[in-house]
Image (cartoon, rainbow, N blue to C red):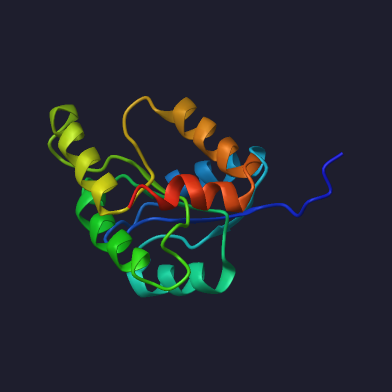
Length: 153
């Protein structure tokens, strides 16, 4: 039996997104996957997100957006997070409806978001892939995650 503490996931949307149903769904999914979830809610300012991650030191950061502006806001937000001491290697993912250009714009959005500092970008029918990623983070010791994710930036 594993007696290790339950890992924490910080869940948020971007500053321009007022939707919450996606956050409720993901909170339940992450809890089912074995995380304690700190759901920051809608319209979260970048500063609050960075401060929360600095204080809580979660195992995973999940950003969900459905308003079509997630790629723009997410790119700005992750750059701020990555320059914050102690958060450069925090596993961070973004997903949902990240742009208004449809599926044809997805490869460009994905590339930009990964280059900016996200470890995963999940659009379209990518829920199983997201769940695999979340389980991998949950089951991997922190020092191994630093080694694998820290080298990609």
